[in-house]
Length: 185
Image (tube, rainbow, N blue to C red; front, side):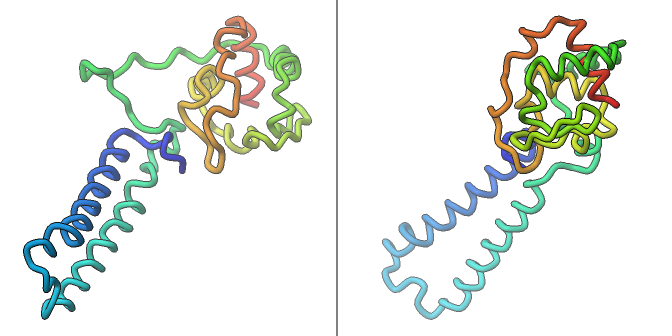
């Protein structure tokens, strides 16, 4: 999973463990030898054991913090987010009442098929993720967010900033609702 898709708490956890690992490396390589030139000396085996434990701890933290919880993966969001005041953001808008047939035309007119595979459109693009798979079971709010803020959640194996960032401005509300209805098929 790309770092951008991780929640703030997971990023913080990775940063803290990485900082501890870096401090350990700097202290054992630069600081201790300055005052004890014979370091590690007779305690070499204990130092090597401690080094291996710190390394394993770092790798374990990467495995734990490097993935999101099952609930956030299932919901299609990177994590629950709070505003700077500490309150929960407003709930997502209600499911749009779009026209899937009109949404197919919006899909075609905006070149979505050139980048995405999507079975109902007969699209076979490979630049972006297969929408038939990554949108299966997703809510209208998640699909809307994926269109208007495509970097909010990045599908595994893809980089941010590939999809145009301006569909929220270039598509009319009706077009967006129609496209969402089409993508929910």
